[in-house]
Image (cartoon, rainbow, N blue to C red; front, side):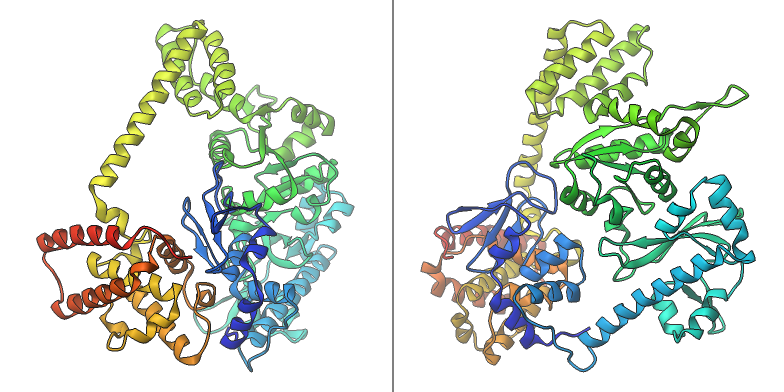
Length: 597
């Protein structure tokens, strides 16, 4: 889609990035910047900064950066058009229809949502027809889901036919392109299309606004894949979807429960645990954690009690480690079959076999994340054997050494020592020895990084890596100066974007010159719609580097000379590149110092 550039300029002129970011992050002003905990990764010491003069944000931890639109895109997991609409509403603007860009995209999105709703009604109606009897029996008998909760979650049946949905939707006025856009049909080799979902239990995926953004499904026979979701689209992104959140967000319970399966969610809601959600067959992501943090301060992990489930639990704990969400782990016991074999249970199995009260008892006795990890380590060893006891203590000490709280280190160190029959002081010494080793290793890594300055001078994103370090550093410096004071662009006659060694920096330079010529604003926010997210991250990082405006005149001439000289000389040899790198570092010191904000 294409939103008119003049509208974006007007929108950015009405936005104050400090106000926008403050809606999501608690900021504290220090000097010319505002600081806070980054909303895009978990941290305890603020590395996220907002610069009001430049109308930009940048995180020194994860590297994300940009203007107001980019911030809302990331924090709300929105597309560019949706972020623009959200911010336009904030300042009382209406996003214009440019005759085929924005209006067309908006109508397309609306049509997909309407099609999803009509498809959900079709699948729901199939449950009461002969074509859906197998699915209806599965819901009723196998899963024991009541009619009330079947209706609440909109469960339906996809008939075992190639075009049942297509024919029904065509009668409602939808076309082939609509069905393909929504991910409800698949293109065939002969140019035709066929139903994506056939002979399946259908579960609509509903967002917090109540819109059906896609589907997940389970096959009724032995064909593959067993579970099938809507493909990734502009409105269906698995990394930020939590199934059941549309209901869980209204829970009166003090926490959320995270399970693996969609059916687990429905079963637990039916049993009274309306605080249950699930990811869409994916591992927990930073996006999921950010969304969960809006609704709860405690998360109970309830994954399957098998190797895969335990691995997923450990990964989730690691990801949640530095968040504000307290973590507990509910371990489902294995079930003994009639033959005496112990088999795993998921939440759905446990509720059916043991009932809601037994699940509540497990909830109340669930371990915190450290207890769970320590128990998981202990279960790997036979503590009656000296050799394995020593291995257990080593593994436990490694885990405990990673805890940031000295109180936690003492509590769990003592607990591990007691389990293995070791003195508390000996365990404490081992933990401190490992912490000292970690600190030494980190210092060595830092020293190695410092010995290879080119690594620090290169963009993090591989696709943006520089081929000529010295020229690129001059290009960065030049852009910093003109972004601080656009009048310096008027002194750069004779320097064209083609002379830049970095394609990205050349495109930025060209965009700034065009904006200057058109009398349009020049700041990082103004570039949000023109560059990719990873490119905006890099530009934000460049602008965070020091640049003294007291020496801007001389620096600009030097940067221009370096760029033109390097361009005229072409490729350089590696030995000369090292000399140039040394000169660049010296130049950085001479032009750095007091920054102009």
